[in-house]
Amino acid sequence: MTEHSTCHITLVPLGRTLTVPRGSNLGDAIHELGLEFPCGGKGTCGNCKVRVLAGHIALDPVHEAVLKRKKLDDEWRLACLSQVNDDITIEVAQFESIVLADETPFRFTPRNQCGIAVDLGSTTLVSQLLDMENGQVLAVQTALNPQAVYGADIMSRIGYAMQSPENAARLTSLIRQTVGAQVETLARQATRPIGRVRIVGNSVMHHLFCGLDVTPLSAYPFESPRNGMVHFGPADLGWNIDPNIDITFLPNIGSFVGSDILAGIYAAGMFSSEAPRVLVDLGTNGEIAVGNRKGIACASTAAGPAFEGSNISCGMRASTGAISSIEMEGGQQKIHVIGSGKAKGICGSGLIDAIYLGVTRGDIDEQGVILHDPKVLPLTDEVHLEQQDIREFQLAKAAVATGVELLLHDANLTHEGIDKMFIAGGFGNYINLDHATRLGLLEFTPAQIVKLSNSALIGAKMFLFQDDDFINGLLPFTHHISLESDPAFLDTFCQKILFTTR
Ligand code: FES
Image (tube, rainbow, N blue to C red; front, side, top):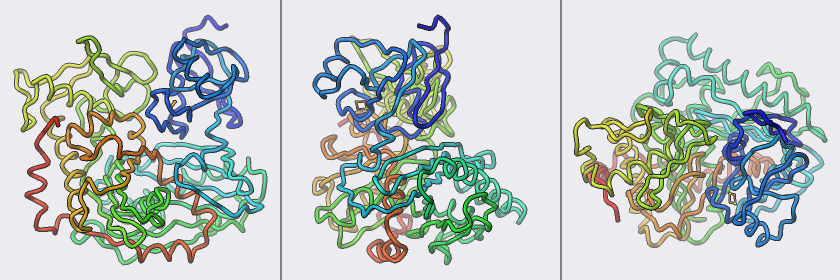
């Protein structure tokens, strides 16, 4: 057993090694590789199971009992319940079965090929190499979107791109290079010839990747005439892969609602479900879809990047050092920090918990005002919330709740009439559903809510098996609604900005 203050985690078949502080939670350490935590890391679903090939992960009685209940023998551990105190080599089961991990039945016709699915997010990008003969994920690549240095949110990137053709070209080139590096790495690990690469992303990512003018997305009605599917050959992008591989950026639904949401809707089974469903994707922007197989209304909300920690004084992404949850235990605040070290900041899920506890303790009133001076809520020695942070959260929460309410109204539905509400987006993994529903961010019961993690990536993988006509044929079943032009928008927004603790 190692005596060092850090430990190495070697992942197979990815061939990657991570160095983490000794005592780190294994789930926290590997979640950025695209691992999904359907139960939010509570040790109940078993989906984060890893096989320990070398080294040792100790078991406590709770962990042991869960393994027994899941009928997993001694070589298995649940990442979310494991502490890293040794150099270990693990095999992540989910990387082998991630395509089928979604609850929605996913049938595919096997192909003697590999495919690459890319989820190009405003903040992060994830690419997966899929063996299309058996649906296995063979390798994963993740990276931060390098465009972020030119603005955290999509409106800032649009602004930057519109300043000059050189700026727009810089954003296009940066993202093509980064996705290209991922695709080239994955292509070297393919066990069969690669047939296609399918890329999904929001409308701004679509336009910037494809080298299209973003000006139509800068002003009302935020509609671009060039939302369609775009095909590339590797030479068009300067990618050093087999020249026969088809690279496709999938089509947008409309306005800011891109192919990431089209893929998410597909992954959530909304195109085939008779019962009405809701998809809420809380990323840098907030997108919402409501409907069933007969028709799906979609909208984007100006939720801003608060849920990803941007524009929050001590905010950060859900990575090592972020406060990801806060719970009360025996009258004491129990703070969970990703990586188990010192808190460096707070991410979206921690923000929800901190504000929920502030409201229930009476530190924050219904209007969102911090009721004592100075108007600061300390969380640790170095991490705190300021009044402006509460405002940012209120605006984001009101934007999402208003969007859901107006789309439900448009479809003649109520919250109670919804069969399942899927929450997608990275921070959905860690979110405390009870706190989120009580604060009025998601006005559904926890029983209605299903965490779908990266629905865009799941959908992109499913689209690898579908031809272009099938994907384009889904678009007429979707329509985009402009929330801001709805006469009820302002009243609803003002109502949703208040805090309730139902
Ligand atoms: S058991 Fe559900 S995420 Fe670990």
